[in-house]
View 1 (cartoon, rainbow, N blue to C red):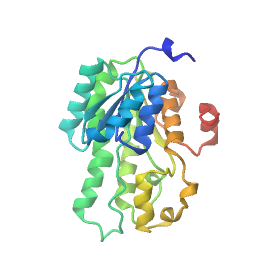
View 2 (tube, rainbow, N blue to C red):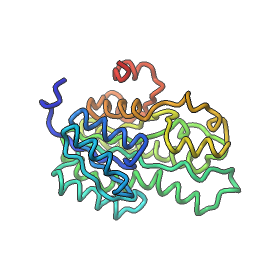
View 3 (cartoon, rainbow, N blue to C red):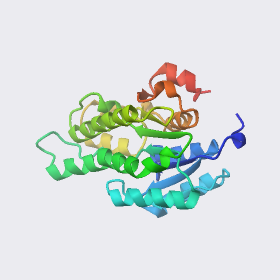
Amino acid sequence: MNVSLQPKRVALITGATRGIGAACALELARTGITPVLAVRQIERAQTIARGCQALGVSASIVQCDVADASQARAAVEQTLAQHGQLDILINNAGVVDPIGRIGDVSPEEFSKALHVNLAGPFNMIDAALGALRRSASATVINVSTGAAHGPREGWAAYCSSKAGLWMLTRCLAHESPAEHIAVFGLQPGMVDTDMQVRIRASGMNEVSRVPREQLGSAARAARLIAWIAAERPLDLHGQDLSIRDESLIKRSGIDR
């Protein structure tokens, strides 16, 4: 498909300094979608933004701690001021900490995980909803995990917050017809990122013992996210999609 013939679309990506978020920004730029990198540290995102700009799109950076609702609103406002529209929201920012059994994790640590992994996406959706409703191709993609659907030792905060994110995805999809705002969750699988470094160092549960060579790449996960953003498969609206789903991989063609 000739991307130059497609209407311009703008995507706001949280946690875009590294890992899946950074890979998403670059992959979206390759498809002609303008990425806006919502990050806590602007300096760390500049290399990614320059990489996107080298692909011919006007990528930009906005400072945002997703756990802060006022910063989420400011990030959306800056996006609209710079680009005039917002069509795609990718809620990627997340934390695996605290890693520890219940009783060893403090209430403050648990609450922080909830604020980033669950309240953060809510803050971004709440801030972006008005702009998304004005878009003819509005799409929300919440980066999920298999841990949202099953418990793991030492991951009470992560599993609980991501299970909440899955329900938030379902609620948004329930309230928003697919033709107005297409909503998806996406489980990227075990990806070789800094989060996996932290998991391996913890020695907690079987995930920490998965050899690094068996981990997936951030680039492959980003290709699937970019396909969802570009194609908006409305028959999958409201689902928590998995990169392990062979039919989805075949349909997306990301491994061709």
